[in-house]
Image (cartoon, rainbow, N blue to C red; front, side):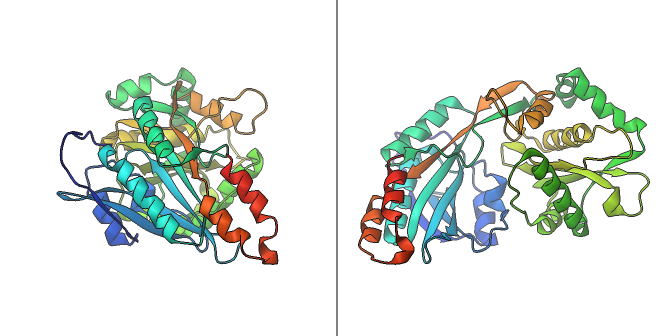
Length: 365
């Protein structure tokens, strides 16, 4: 968030509008560090709609909160609202007012079952102030986490040669090995490769026991081709293969989040005809790309810090070859639906049987 003189008499105003491409571009031009998913529609969720809670300052749009509304499948005619990456998307002095406006927007819409907010910032002091503002606005820390709590960070302020030298020697060796293999890296700018990319990601999720939520990769690849500083898809291709799709054995996606970049998605084939450390050169390519447009740090996309069995531990071990700088970045907050409980309790409809108890449990969290 941009530091603001709290003694200033600046008056903020707020409104909620549909997140059209023009509205997203207007937000991106503000002085805030605007994450990729605020500037581009990433999800492929059927029925999701996006609105922007805009913050108006003396010089125009000063930031905002992106509101994703999803239909509640168990309760026809109702929805849930989610806000992603609260932390750098609006001036800190405007936060309390923005949260108050959000509450008013939700209270005025009788169809909202739940509102959740994911906090995201690696700055502990700022995160504490954001969480205090959420608590003061009636939000509660939620046991369920929609995004990762911790990540590994790479400082990109030094020259890129120093960044590379700071990697574990095994990572450096595996990056260099690609030059000795019958394979090569190439930017993916052809949307026709999206089906192959989907297959690679889905297979990776199966191996780790995760739930795959398909992305509109064809559209995202095309957007990356048109706006190469906003995101980058890089693929690792075998030199000899029947066709380009079969040649693609791994890819990684990096995103520009204003002040930093992140490793959003990565996947590779399980069985390769040659011994090849696929993930290392792909990830290093994204780090070089981020350093090239001036990112101050690189977010490795979450890390597991729990002890014991974790299906994602292997991925976390891979990331630790690039960084050991663990940072807490997030948490999920929920607005207890007190007024909603009262409304639904008055409706004697079989479709909402048991909802009173469910909402009571939700509000108690």
